Amino acid sequence: MKDEAPPEAALPFSGIRIIDFSKLLPGPWSTQMLADMGADVIKVEAPGLGDPSRHNAPHYKQQSVYFGFANRNKRSIELDLRTEAGREAARRLIATADVMLESFAPGGAAKLGIDYETARKIKPDIIYCSISGFGQDGPLAASSGHDMVVQALAGIISTTGGGEMPQFQAADYAAAAFSTIGILSALYRRRDSGEGAYFDVSMLDSLLAMGFPCLVHALSRASGGTGLPVLNAWGKNPRYAIYPTRDQRHVAVALLEAGPWKKFCEVIGRPDLVVSEQLHERLSDHGDRSVVYRQVIGDYCAARTMDEIEQAMRARDIPVCPVLNGDEALASPQVKARGMVYWDDDPHEGRVLHIGNPLARAGFTKLDRSPPPLLGEHTESILRELGLAGEQSPIKSA
Image (tube, rainbow, N blue to C red; front, side, top):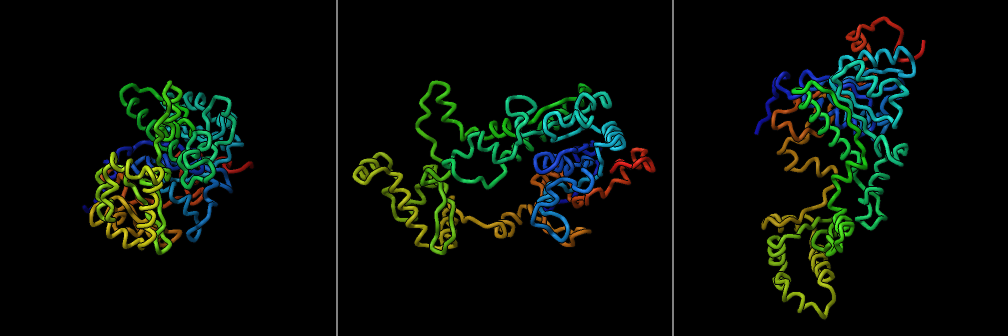
């Protein structure tokens, strides 16, 4: 299906202004989603340094790829919130805002004079979102909320045995998702009530809510159950695991359901592994059936290349697929068919490849995306909008 850009006014959040005081990933990814859907997002950054993710490797020619992924369709203003001029500019921004989002440590926004109570006096119907690692209260409130620490405390890392590093910022994205949902909910409610809102989004709270499959055994035990049988996933179940192939690649095996498992057993010539009641009796002399499953699947994969396995499995619609690297994933026919990657002519970087928004096909997001801003790129134009052109610099002390 060919995507057509919707008129700007038809975007869901056209006319909504968001002042974003957040940095790194949870807040910026949340506000980028809203910017994609038409919101005017003004990113407030510290002079000189800006959002620390601007400096994350690798880079295009100038800017960080990481930073660019979470900051398109935004404007950037540099403000030194340690100065009165900077705080006055921030107050002027808040007065124009529908939504404000910040990711300071608890108490940090108040020290800078941009906390919710202050913002509400300036704009009574402001929607204010605070994102932090552990929330604004509780014994860990003042602790640094890095993603890996949050995953460890949420019980997520323990699912792999507790000794493996996570490869995905699950806590960051969980908080970003709930922040976006909270902002959308508050905007919807305000439409009828006229009321603003304050909500405190914790990475730990968010990951607990999303990570319940990892906690079902603990929930059972806490409620008087045994927590058994154990839900063996994430590689512990041989029918839901990663296996090496003959050409030193890997395939992902997801054969938990009876139907795909039956088809797989037929393809590999082991129909005897299908009937569970008889299986237990036949394998009783050979140890636990999971050992046999792992051996049989492992032998099949080790004897074939990744491509050979993919072709055989795709022919029968069996959920065994290659483990692609990043380059292969971005180039895959499925990703291209869904329009999830696109080339853009960035005025600062030249021709660059980007990952798109899954809602673009529904007409909810911009297709004519603007590139991530340079640090302070829009400072002067925004100051003119606020009536502060020619005033004392809000970027640094006079």
